Length: 82
Image 1 (cartoon, rainbow, N blue to C red):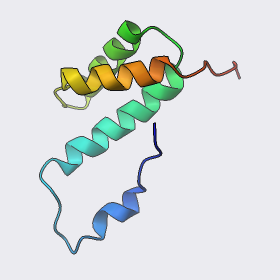
Image 2: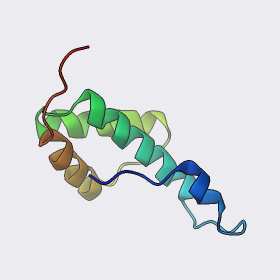
Image 3: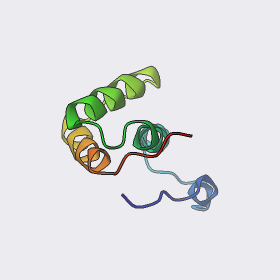
Image 4: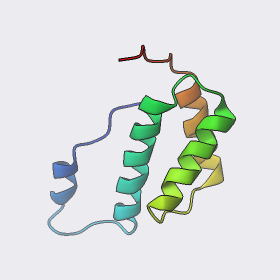
């Protein structure tokens, strides 16, 4: 997965933002969060975590996109415990 753009770069379009930009910020936040907490787990576990957390933020998950994210996150190596 590629790093996300900084939030400050979203405001550089002269006040014009694409529809759905707030939902995309929420998706980016949840994907990054799940990528640190569920990496290396099964795709089903990752997909469920993504869906659960997106619903908390009021985002209806796109099933096709969630499958792509889940596959990428599950392929990441687990982080060592802190």
